[in-house]
Length: 474
Image 1: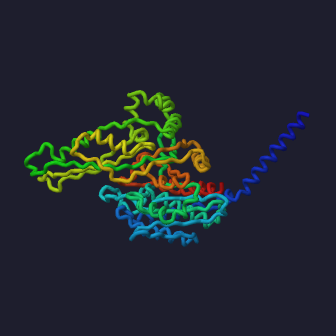
Image 2: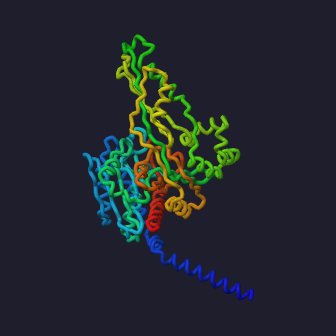
Image 3: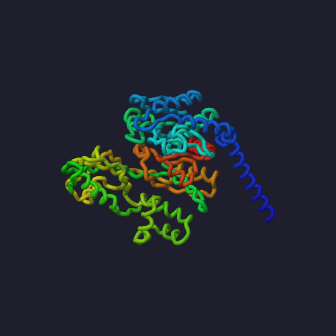
């Protein structure tokens, strides 16, 4: 009786295994992934990113029409429906769509085509050369974010060429002017909201995957961002000849106000997503840091721990509103004391912060009626996406196929991303890019010698395609 029961049990198990294997074998997405000649597509990805990096879209002025035409040519060659929207002279967005069967809502692949300016004098190679040096691909935008935009375009092209079955429409949207005024997305949402408003998910920049020697790789999936709130201080005073000092001159008043603002320690505030981040990375730390991170809320009551963690650039921005002095203006002549001087601060506010209350507190810190505090950017209330969605769980699943030991955690981004503009439409938007880099390379974003490892780009396009192929069918 016992052996017969065992035999029956084994038959049932084998039947279930066989059924599962047969279902897997008949999974059209799995079959599509197995049949792809990845070496050829990876070679094409590297070549195309080099071409893309050679197009100078420094903003200002942007000139993104050139890159929209670059993408259009690529999509036309693959038979992908696309439209270029030139909304101002030399400024354009490009929209492409691969139709699914309509059973699920669309997935948007969003990127921006403009880049910040680069000073060639500080670069190892010219910033718009797309050169490969020691296995690394150099170029302004290599990280932010022409690499991801090109991978997204290649995902669309591969899906079209390989006839990937789709339950969701795949939408590619490359926008202009993200680095300065966001006129590209603003125009798109004002004039063609119908092209994106029904989407369920969106993937864009805002993720970072950092390799820490001896600790492994931490994948940060961007689920929220801080909100920019740029502020200018304008000091006024009596001007005159530089040979006769004026104690309360505009530059002197401004300098004293700047010092007070730079030394201002804004309050600590722990967001739930940030608390979860520290709980998760605790497993990668040694004691006593592991326990301090695991109990981060209690640890932040310890002044010594607060001093340590806020002196760490990687953690400080997550815990408070931040203020960076970025611009100063005074006289145009050394021997002239101007009657007006100004400076600008890049302020980033945590979700839930009241910008007007922050502005009033800055006035209190400045403490000088001769120094005006003026906001110079439009404030957009920050928002976030949940971590319990299909797409977020799929990030975890697909990443672990390629790096089983990777730690995956939600991330609050220090910088703004366009996710904030699309979440109010009911879209769950995430920052994710499947390229693993060292903190040293990560620091080249918006800096000299911006670059990515070529092998990570080759690996990344394969990961991105598998992620999108699966997301488009579940």
